[in-house]
Length: 361
Image 1: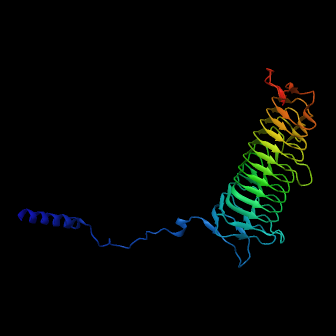
Image 2: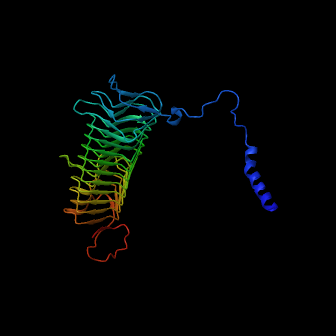
Image 3: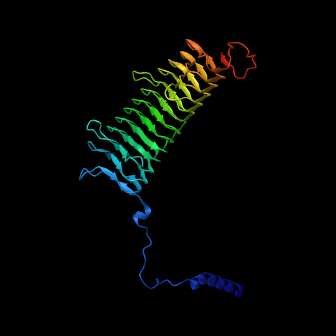
């Protein structure tokens, strides 16, 4: 009995003990400061909405971060959104900027010439009379994950040092995507536009992009074109090539099929291009057409074109290419060029030790 009583007493003290060490419950003296954050701290960006009261177009005139809070409707003879300041980020948050080509809405987003560091991402721009995004005279513009369709002129137009990534331009009146010098275009698709699919300029890179059913060429300009696909361009009544490039361009690992003109065309500007390891098939002209000097044409596979590789210029190097089932000729090469021997190896074992030979198989 004594041991049980002592145990119960000890248990009661153990339960009661923590309360004896608790702090003061009364609040400290003086005013109590708020602990909740302001709305600007939670969302430190500026929302953009339509102004139906004054029918005033939207102008972003200060640096900062902005976001769409709803679909934006374009007014007649006005841009959907005009950006007149550099250092602006516009998050479209999946909303649309909607124009009306019948009443003449201008560009979907218009960036003032000369501005730098404007970023636009994550939405759609549809049915403007001008460009979807117009920023050709700008610098270091970034456009990510934007869909531009049914605009009267270009889908996306940017200036020097731009980056365009993950965008789709479809059924616009002229070029799908056009960028100026030293730009990068990655993982974009250009489909059914009224002009060229994708155009770039000196020092640019186009990688993992696709051009399909555009009225003119699939890709054009100068730069490095890597692992791109061009298919059935030139359907607008004229002739279109898959790739029409010059000025020291590189075309490597690309495919070009079923065009109304050539698969790859080097004909305007200056040469010095590298055309390496491409697949050109079923084109109405040549698989590879060379009308410029000082190019290297190597390890391409040309099948089912009118002419496989057609070289009308001089001082080019043509080696290690393969050809099959081209209608008029597999290789038609001007004599004033360095070229590997053409070997016909159809249904036979290749016995030549010449590593530079061009093969008909």
